[in-house]
Image (cartoon, rainbow, N blue to C red; front, side):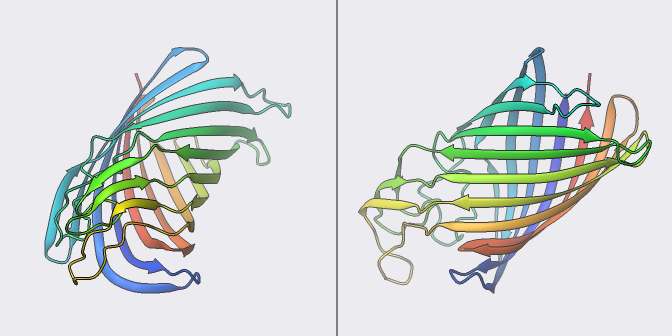
Length: 273
């Protein structure tokens, strides 16, 4: 299966440490995600993710290649309709730091950062169960829980995590937990609707080394506090043919702490062979 996902996201504000929202200058990000997926075995699913984005912030623009991801998913059990048995799989995602993350421009507010600079590993558990509460309109309930870790990252000057002139040291990246609950209903043989709630949690980012000097002449910041964010999303999908489908999605954050808030619209193309 091949998929192309294009989104336009407006990071229009930020959540404070006290869970309140404050306004910031808009950062507009146009992102393209290309998926290539295959299932060489009944119990094994392999996916490659390639990311690129175009950032717009004030008068600055940056066209970037982001980090590269590979996922392997292993089927534990398959759903048996008419019983309580769901479909359950576990997945391992590995991120390869192909995006630019250090020696960034001091004037672009890290909009020229394309990645984290770390070989991040993500371990996930996926759950799916179909129920027939409405005749001829099956509903799929989907749950996903993941935990990710990353090794230390060497940074210089302005970088993805902060920095300044003369910064040199080691970043200890965050650990993260993500959880998604989603429901999808088949309106007809060609149309489906879905809605999801996403929770994201990240631990502190810490730094050891020379802090450097910020643009304002102050000691540069190279660390980040722990963060939380809750988001929603709604989508519609349409099967044009048996092999080709299209979709559209709206999503946005509604609560958070120490993290940007956003609103996003996206378009999806999908082809299965």
